[in-house]
Length: 154
Length: 315
Image (tube, rainbow over all chains, first blue to last red; front, side, top):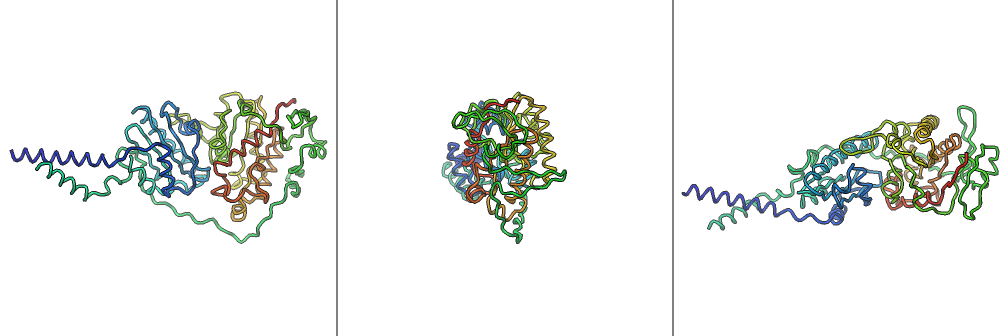
């Protein structure tokens, strides 16, 4: 009986711990607010500008229907830094977006290797995070600062 | 009691693992997330002790001797009418511009700058395709033009535009820019190339390779008018400390592009004008690297295109 109670107690504690860890993740803010928080974190060397969803989707090989409300922030072309936010329509779309994000990073790494090799380490530290059906990609000069922001939500 | 114990355990856990939630790149993230790789510190760009080059005013360049014996007559800076007067012996083609007065201009000299015209609406670009390098990509991302097609990626040059697979078709499939251009019939092809070639192509090679590209574009788009866009200016600081991107070299390579427009009967758009300040450079504070303007400035490029148009060409 004591063993059973102990097991129940441990399980209860574990469950509470798990709940507490989940609770530490704040609600994902609106894309613009998240981008603003990232951009003010000091993680970027350049002020990124928002580009249209159609152009951003073209860069990633994605349709608006994959992630309605997807938004993108890119550099002037001088650096590889960028932010992409994908509120995907469902789990399958999120999986597709993850694949395209990986492909985007690989492609950018390949192109920048011969173009501006100093950008490649940023791409190697790119953050691609998912929480439920929301995916975010972040290429920053200081990946740790970017992670400090994103890990509050993802 | 159980709850107290649970709360105590929870408190202990929370105190002992303060960084748990802040750990980067958790398991659900792809394998590239949070991967720590050593970053290579870049050696600062050398700052050789070179004299500051004062950019020549437009129209004042020395003739550029070419290996095949001819010299380039620099027409930059002259107005359309002025150019027409000094270059009357050039091949003349009938071309109608929408000038401010609505006047029909009688003759057109290939290789002259497309003159300023009344602004057109953006549907003028419905049958257009824009191709090129990182500057063209900046235009694609930030100019806000939603008409026509655009295929532009950083690192693209006259040599790799037909071989580098850079256009994302989705699902991990990429095609070249020329492949993308070949999939549809266009009425106008706008080309922006040159800045990358400054690093590794001499002017003669640049001319030869660009000419071959123009021939290829003619094959792919036989009914399209070709628009060769000049390079944009660099900042004074970039010009001073990076000889490769010196403003004088920009002018020299722009002259090659202009010559190509003349020789290949393409239209020459002097985009340089859309960005240059009174001192002859990209204004300070408008670019991170002295080459690529910040996004907000690309609207100037679109405004330039909308006010420098060719409405009809009769060959």
